Length: 227
Image 1 (cartoon, rainbow, N blue to C red):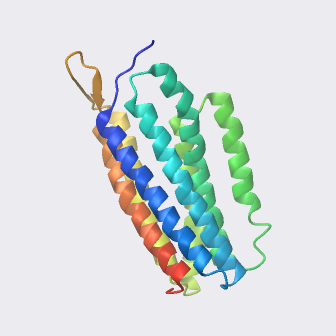
Image 2 (cartoon, one colour):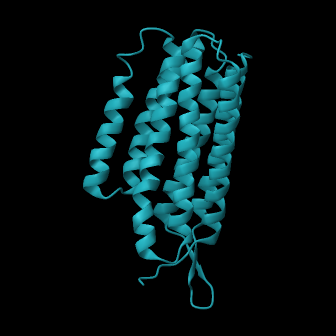
């Protein structure tokens, strides 16, 4: 078996992210079933955000396996799934934001996330899913989410501020990840240096958890009709 260094702390923070994503999805799904009488656009946007949190849970779960295992072949097998769900989660959130802001006549605009996910998948399969591809998708989706969020804010929609703040926090986590990756500071430990600690990964996860919690708070209030 081809071995690699395992990353126990990244395994833990990834699992915490997975639990957070699945928990938020379950709560929103409960509210979605409970409030079926709400207008269709609200119901549809919440459904997209549920899909986003489920994808985040799977993204983090596969990431935990990839980082936590000693097996390089296993890591190579699960990594594409990590990147696939990592991309899908932002496509879901973006779609929900577009539907939320527009309320009507949004079908043509949904071509944007559709085209993005198709290009992402094609490039992913061609390039074997580099992390940089996910970063590029994150930046593109973030710009579009900001545009629609600020439009919603101008229209006085209460969820907008949650979207803006949450996305900013997540982008900060991405900057930390990028800077840490550039610096390349890591710690090898264990009897035979079989473990690896990359602090920027774990800081990225922890900050991202805060951003996701802000997203959820806004989505929860929207689903409850409090915004």
